[in-house]
Length: 69
Image (cartoon, rainbow, N blue to C red; front, side):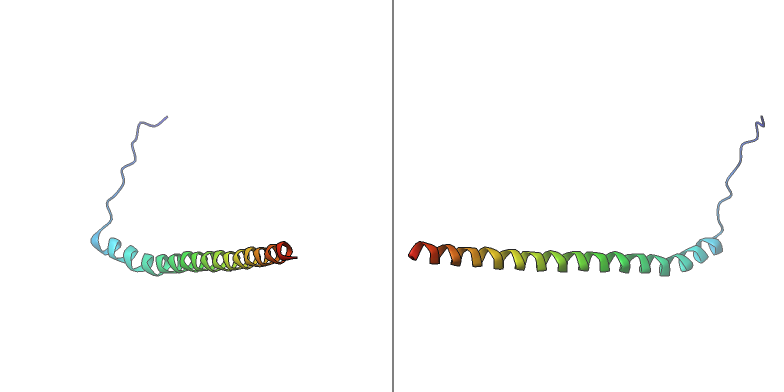
């Protein structure tokens, strides 16, 4: 077994800048995918809430009609 310890070389300023430039567009794509997923989730939740409220309202009206007859 080797007793050699691998040493990590620190990136130069140019390498750090290059990583930053190439990383930003990818990060924006991922963020926009996340935002789209969150918007879809919110829209679906709101749709389901509206359907539930409509069902509850209809059942209350139906119960009101039954109690009057």
